[in-house]
Length: 270
Image (tube, rainbow, N blue to C red; front, top):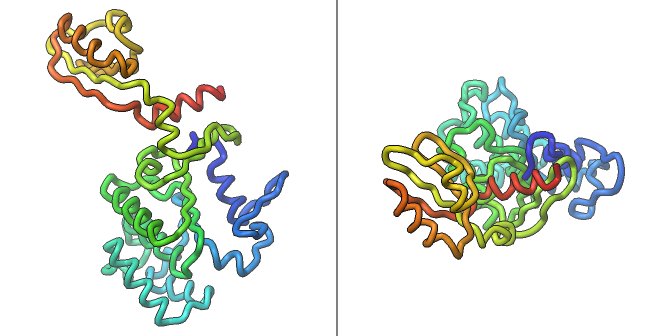
């Protein structure tokens, strides 16, 4: 995870051998990526959300045939993988469509299939859901969870918090090339387990920010809805007092969102 310019794509390029590191050393599966050893390249797959991996003038099927030759995958195994993966992603009817005629979501699903046809041990994904609609994002996330359960190691870079919370077990937060956090998703959330977000929807007059700050930390406000951060121990008392002093239509209590946690880590570095 990291904001724009944090070094996510640069890290991916170094780990896959597309860019040589200016200092230090890198080992992936025991190999120096920049040596581009053929055995190493057969063990990894790469999808970059902002770059096309399939030829736009060919159909996906034609591009897959080229990959089959490059990676020397036995034809019967290759055909079975295409069949299985395309059904999992519901794109089996699009294999003979020219890539340039596909939607972004359709193309990204086929890019994922192309990266897996040679059965890599590690799959590198750089912003794989960038620009996708909600349904396409959810489909890709479900697919990634599925292949992870089959034993694939996935390294995913993103600034979409939902990608990370839906797919990843381990989180590394970077900013300006430095590691801000490295640990499990549960440990990242645990740092904020003593806080809750209270979202309040008011009827009629909405209290001023200054009036609410005596109850908790003001997070955001829009029209008649305001969000406060309060300690978990004081949640019920805070709700009761606000409900007594103001006309409240609806109250939602939730854990601190992941994007807020990560933004706090960014601010620590700044």
